[in-house]
Length: 362
Length: 244
Image (cartoon, helix red, strand yellow):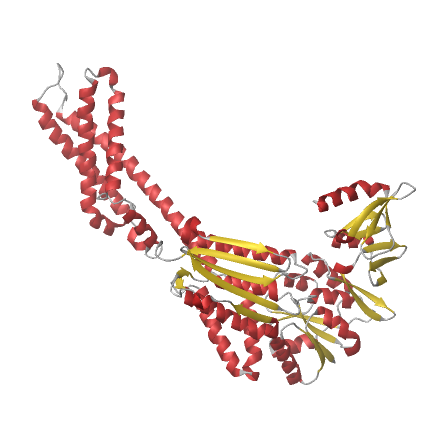
């Protein structure tokens, strides 16, 4: 179970690993499912001819034995052939595994015929003709095998869709720096290139770093130190634009354990929100305050900003959307162990983000 | 041609000023950091053209343009914006000039050569599409422009052709319809009479008069306002809601 989950998680980065639609038949869990399904099939076969059975329990034993043999030998063949099947692609692997299942059915039936031929149960012989026995078993094997393979294929596709959807959503959420910010920054840089080339150069560097992170440089997790650096770079650019109107108070974030890993761009959007909804609408500007603490295995970061006296309806909707976005990303990574809450006082708006830190999560 | 630059970002103003100076044929007469400041300096600077950012704190560019377009001799306005948001579709639809930031010198030149005066209906239709209420009411008192923050207004009262805007410091007359005001400010004002809208936030009491009619008292305003029989129930309900 554990191994399988790890594999799934890695699948986000390495989709090639999991392209085969067949589950791993060497795994305990899959074998168990095979055994249970085979037993159900045995019950089904017996129920279908209950009225002809003279000794139902004895027959259940025989049928079960037979079906389990077919099922387990099929599973064994599929387990051994897995590296080969993986190279065939899904269509080839489907046909090949179907062939393997039929082969196992045929082999076990043949074996059973020779063993059972010697014994007789009750007055009737257990098996009638050799060819009839083989044909009947092959037909059952063909139908059940086809249904099972189809089921596995559909389930695989469904799981792949889910994964792809989650991945796409994660990426879409990450590349979410406001376009306004990009164009405003470009404008600021254009203004500074002649008057203050040094500042323009730094701004270009900061902007490049931010967009590298936003457009996804392949890493989904960064250290707290890096995330704080993103935040500083972002605020540097905004300070060029807003001038004296923007002041930032970094409380004690440097005292936090800097190597905690967190999803990239989780703090930066909170800062962006604070500037966009708290500072930019105020003609006289204000202070964005960032504070953090780390205790009881939780890292808590809080960003607060002044509330403009006349909040526009549109901007608060934008704020909710941005928060919802971060909330979804935190949920994708931490499940329900992360929290994002907001507090509003008379003149301050505060967003508090708590994520598990330390070794308790992967 | 006299140009005024309105933008809340100093680097943006600086750049526009430089570009205009490079073009040579124009004179930058002044700058303002938001719509409100632009309106207040407008009379003194008397520009022919305003280059105005759309998104600004205090009062945005659209609202400032709306107030300007109501002047007897309105200036031309070219909007500037960093990002082509939905508002620009409305600008195009109503032939309102705009420039995308960072502004190119050639574009600026073209826009300045092609400037046209905004008509009131143009700005109003753009503003209506935005669906936002104004932050200020603009009135002309003996030729001077007066801006009253909507958040200070206690009531609007219609009288024949004009509407009286009442705030603690006094009152001004504007030429707008009470119906349009009700639509625009319906979130914070309530109709209490065929001729009056009051600011919900400033109502201090509802009382019965000796004649049996109902009136409201407003904070910092000595005169009570009559609530018509038709509106009594709705007004009571509203204040019960607000009291909770």
